[in-house]
Image 1 (tube, one colour):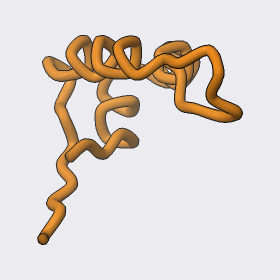
Image 2 (tube, helix red, strand yellow):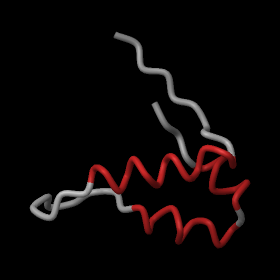
Image 3 (cartoon, helix red, strand yellow):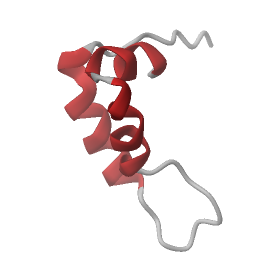
Length: 55
C-alpha cells in the first residue's frame, strides 16, 4: 500500500482541524491536537498549510 502525503492548502486547514478534533481521545498518552494548528498559524495560513502534510 502506498501512502501519498499532500499539503492541504489554505482552504483545507478547516477540514484538517475538524479531523483532528474527531480523533481526540482523552485516554491517549499523546496525540496531535487541533490547537497545534492554531499555534502554528501565528506564522500565517500559508505557512501552516505548507507545514502540514495529510494523507
